[in-house]
Length: 334
Image (tube, rainbow, N blue to C red):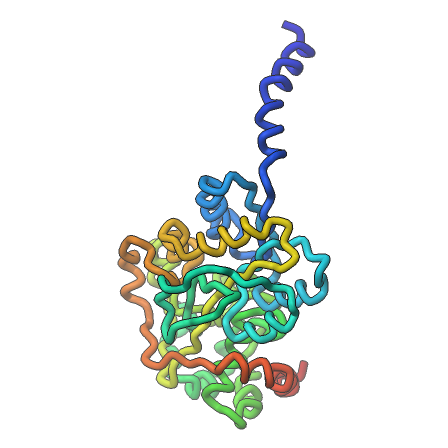
């Protein structure tokens, strides 16, 4: 059989499949870059939702959660996003102020988020507590409080994320403010000698940590579970702070300008189903926002359990974020 004939038969055989794919509606979701890769939850979420939606779910990875808000502000009504996923609860007033989001229509009754959450626009999909994760082979005496961190050995460096682009970076800004209040700038100045670098997002700083370039990094209490489950090691631990740990709840919302509004609402509702929630613990390495329908892995029982979840009301964050960020920049000499 001639090669041309083989190609012709192949094109005929695949034509219906290609046509079917072309007919499927596309749902574009902006999220943070660590959600998208093969080792993140994105591929499993894509497969699970596409199995029920008869659509093509496409993720666009951006630097981090705050970067999603910044990107949407820049694009405005011209954005190609149907859904944005990965912002945090303290950003809700600013997200709503853009006028870009539509009511979700999702029943939030299944939520098990600490302190509860109620909103007609945004849907929580997981939550975590911020923590400083350290390498036990490099740090024998980890800090047991924020005061210990501020007054610790300046040769034991830390990596943190930028409060202007990163949700954990913003969370750290609020963590410090929730503990030190008007003395926050003083606290940042004391921490400055310990900071090796400030990265745009979480992935860069955590990569420095796992590569051994820094012995401590701003991350989450859930991070050690990844190393135990995926790498079989308990080498990496989260330091438990006596003042408490800052709670971050991650959200998704549908864009008012979506070309697929009904599909976007279906995706938001899907976030609270067991099919999505069971992906979260060992996919996004966070705690599920609704019942996953199965027990959490054993490693999650070994994690730091914050005695005091810390939060600042979202309205207060919206009113003062610019000033608190300027305070942070002055203290770090940026």
